[in-house]
Length: 152
Image 1 (tube, helix red, strand yellow):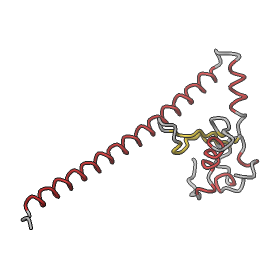
Image 2 (image 1 turned 180 degrees about the vertical axis):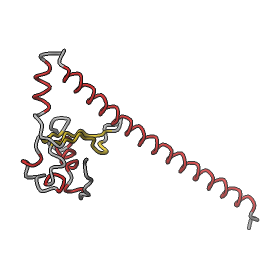
Image 3 (image 1 turned 45 degrees about the vertical axis):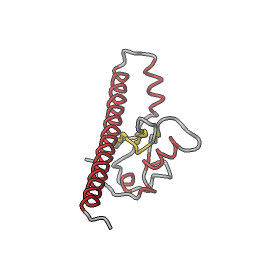
Image 4 (image 1 turned 135 degrees about the horizontal axis):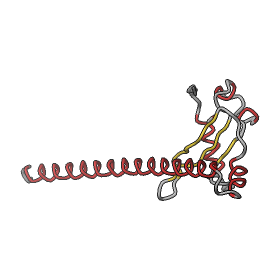
């Protein structure tokens, strides 16, 4: 069972994902670490030291406007071969069950990312509507008070 370990944002693997994917170099659209224990950036993290997590694959969550708002990731307690190598091997044989599995994972991750960004967008729209409603009510109250007060 995966244990939760609090981490500072500056120490998080997700931050490295954001830097790698949206940084000045604009790397691939994902960040992958096949063995966290062998990577000096992450080997000291508590969940790596206790062997809870060895593999990390993360991709950015982006709004429909292309703004990166976070990451979504897949973790494993075992080190893995690079996903690119697995994908290349599977492309040769479309009947390989691994291809189907990888497509399902990709589709699910993409769907979750879309759901999260849609939810956040709806929350923002709701907050904007509430703000506009408060502004309208305040304006109406101001107008009522200005009409009710005697002119000097």
